[in-house]
Each structure stands twice: as structure tokens, then as C-alpha cells.
Length: 112
Image (cartoon, rainbow, N blue to C red; front, side, top):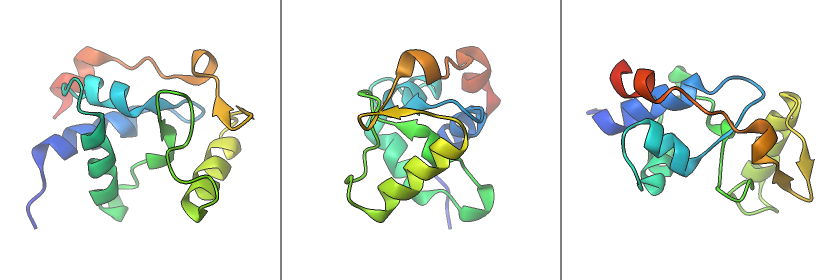
């Protein structure tokens, strides 16, 4: 199976998000060097090999919300994983000013 090199960069960025922090799909794309490619981040996360253990749950949308349907199992899993890391939700929203990871653009661009 061939692995998309863009996805590898995205996985590396997501793996850099520390425990207790989140990033948005758009910021992950930007840190990976793919400005305005937020949807590609979702695609990369869906195709990540399980053995990589990419912390997909740390990526949320730009409104600070989980993108899965709120009544779905994936949304409940993501919320629980984030809460286990100390992320607080208020009315279903994460305060990005408190929890957003700022990243290191230079190291992320040149890592892979």
C-alpha cells in the first residue's frame, strides 16, 4: 500500500500536539505546509495506520467543537479522550484560547 507523503506530514504534525492541547484542522494543515487544506487533514486522519497511534482526538474544528455528529459514538469517544487529558468543554465547545497548541511551524515543515 502506497502512503500519501502529504498524509505523512499531517500525521507528524498531529503527533506533535501535546497531551492536554488541541489544534484545528486548518492549523494542522498550515503547520504541515498545506494552507487552506483542512479537509485533507480529515482524510489523512481517517487513513492513518492504527499502529502509528496518531492522536486524532486532539484535532477539532475552528469553532472549538468536535466535528463528528454530536449523538454519535465517535463524538463521545473523542470528547472522553479530550476530557481525560484535562480539556474542558463548555456548552460543547473547547476554549481555543486556553487549549490551542501553537505549534512550531519550522520544525513541522522540515520534519518529513
